[in-house]
Length: 467
Length: 47
Image (tube, rainbow over the protein chains, first blue to last red):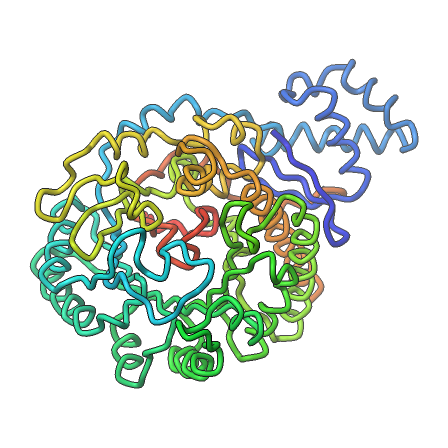
């Protein structure tokens, strides 16, 4: 499968099944397109036939025939190297991959089902997750860490995210659990990577010092410009949160040397010009940023709709160009959704089998219930067990394990399948009532982000050659 | 090649040989929590 697109003056050819990315001139772009249209299943052998050459030369009569033949030879060479017209041979091994024994390697600890903000789009419904306000006790948290260690097999690095609601509302338990984890990692030869996701309201110097000492990553929630943030992220009394939070986040980011954190926003239909919010982050001095599209039904006034996509695509394009320009001038910043590692990214096993929710990754409620991920918390059909009894409904894990890019029709046709791994199962469930589908508006945005991310790589490669 | 510049040397096909160790980070733990971002992770298999 080949995906071709033009962006910011670059002609890009992605060989989907090998992951090879080619930046080509217009002539090569047209030759590859013509060959792909002729036969999407070309092999080196079919490319070498006289018929292919004659048809190509005839169809591209506007180009010099010798040049076209030279390009055909290049395409044949790349195909023989496994970098063009590569066949999808992974589907044959998906069953083996799915039957492998998985271990639990990450937990999302819902340390507080309570929040001191009242964000309008919160999937946790102001922290309550369709349930009651509650704080996780140390005892429940300790059992969760024990469960993780006991179910992690030989995996050494274990990830624990302190999540909410707002985890700083239960700060002492966070500290105690980190201390407990550090004791246990010595006993069991494990290493905990703790992370925390916070709205910053209760952030102070003591918390900052602890976070910097103990947390591998910190996710700081802020939506961007003051008016945008305060519209969606007010306190319960309606007052905006921007003025209180921004200076705290700036201090924290600086104290972490602008590394190992993300300032993370959510954009909605109310700020489809969200690139301005990302640039606002940059203006505030942040260097690591993330901006997620809100996910919600069309009945929510702020939800992203299909008709918004052209504007969103234009925003991503504009942001990508600005990022290239800033990078060239030594003022670059990192945007999570444009991060792509073309050389050392995850293996194809990971890419086809998804995010690991329900199998490798579980969420724990304040009272110790286990769910496939934070987004399923409160959906009783997905209650898998608890920290005392472990997984009592393994069939739920089996259902998640059976999900892959090959079980979803829309993924089979999609060029981006090895970058999103089939997308978010919670989003699929929200829109289709099954985890075995895709959330199409989300897919459209993901495809655009992958295109932009690759284009940025092309531009940076250009820059490297020029300098 | 005069007309074609390939940006990467590694291919997904090659990762079949040593892949599948499972040491990589869980994607949702980093900075999304509402989408799926496997492609921007880094392989942790240093073998």
